[in-house]
Image 1 (cartoon, rainbow, N blue to C red):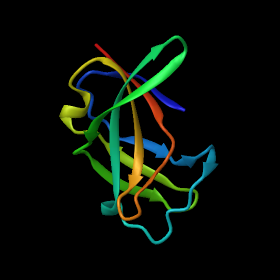
Image 2 (image 1 turned 120 degrees about the vertical axis):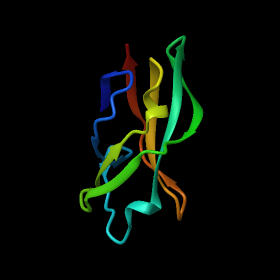
Image 3 (image 1 turned 180 degrees about the horizontal axis):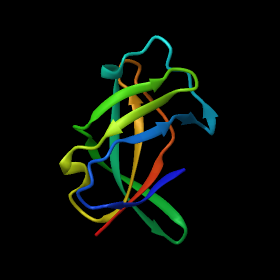
Length: 108
C-alpha cells in the first residue's frame, strides 16, 4: 500500500493500517505517544529500492483502532515541503519495533 500522489504542502490526516510482513498488527496496550512515523527518501537503481533515513516526523499520531492496528497521522509541514519519492514506516519507540515501509510520492 502506498500514499500516491500527495500534493506538496498538504496537511490532511492519513489513516494507516499497520502491517508487519503483510500481517495485521495488534496495538493493544500502547498509547499514541509510544509511536513515531519515520521518513525516508527512496531511489531505485537497477530494480533495487534504497531507503535513506530523513528522520522522525513531528506530525500528530493517534490510534484509530487497536486490533487490527490502524493509526491516524497528520504530517508536519516539513514532512511535505518538497516533491519527491519517499517512504515512511511506523515505529514503536519502547521496543523498538518497525512496521512495513509505505511508499509516498509527493508531487507539485
